[in-house]
Length: 459
Image 1 (cartoon, rainbow, N blue to C red):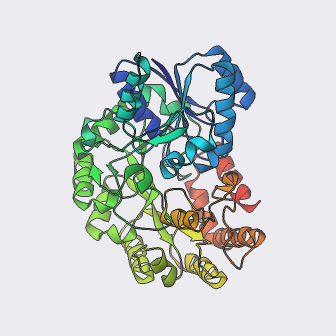
Image 2 (cartoon, one colour):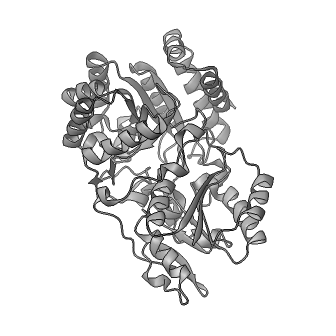
Image 3 (tube, rainbow, N blue to C red):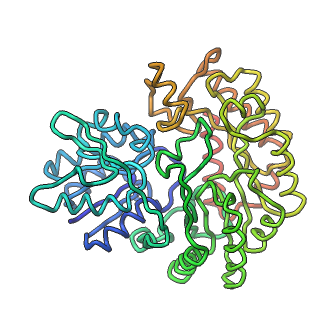
């Protein structure tokens, strides 16, 4: 089969290779299929450009990776595909379909299928079914499909041995062809490349939807397997800066130690960061020193709230005292930069508690901060609770970090946006923060993108 895997046109700042699509492409190639990857943002596509692309390029299966804010773009892409290639199969996958498997196909009538969770085992089976004379979709795990007038959701399977999954198809998404807009915004060298070392999360945070894709079963690659991929990317694509994207890397303390020790022993002289965020309570002095020695220069950390009550309400299982203790440890024992993630507007959170989060952020010895308005992400416990109450009618176009997707009781949309603006201005318009950020900018293009992100946040 000829298969296209694509990132839709959307409003994100992050433009980098998609590990999800890269892994799927690799297993499909291994199964003998012809695969292409289209990143519409990298290509600077408009919908007119995409229309022209569909007219000129024929595929048997078009697969769109989507987040919640991709709902409207996905509808537009699907309409264009079906207009020019009505017999081609269409599929959506990613975080939003995984979080709402019951609702995704009714919401996207021109999508033939959806894939939920990790798709490396399921995707080749779907292609085999589509290639056969009498497709048996019931046998394809992770598949959401239309069985006449009913929506069928098949049981989920996932890979237990991550080392058996081939490396992403990097030749289809050469890191050198992407703009200087990686996850985390800051980097030491360009090009950068994302990698993952672990999957699954055992934590119970009520606002997070990560387990909808990777489940709560934790699995890990071997240190040797990860380092082999790093060598491949360095040798073939000149990558010296790696973004470890899994949020639970530092929870695997033995893996961290082995990875760092072997990275040093290999003498690769690369840099790496964790831009997706790590749990502060997993950090130890021994591992932090090893991480820095092996090239770690930046950690994003999930702080979220300045109210202990909200930490407890959301099952974060973190205390304000531990937050301060671990941040102080990072600052005293390493030169690793820190970015704090903060969140406003959890259902049940008061205005005074949101303002306490802003004060808490400014009181911490961190280098950068990201202030997000809460989004009821499909697949999260809060989303399920709001859905149970009949309160899950959302404008997915607003599911973006600098927008307001949900307005808690006692607040207005305007007040939520103003709180976010004040948080950013109060944190960043301090001489020491400005000076330290200026020292991290590596090019005029990098400076332009950072400035654009800041002013977009103020709108």
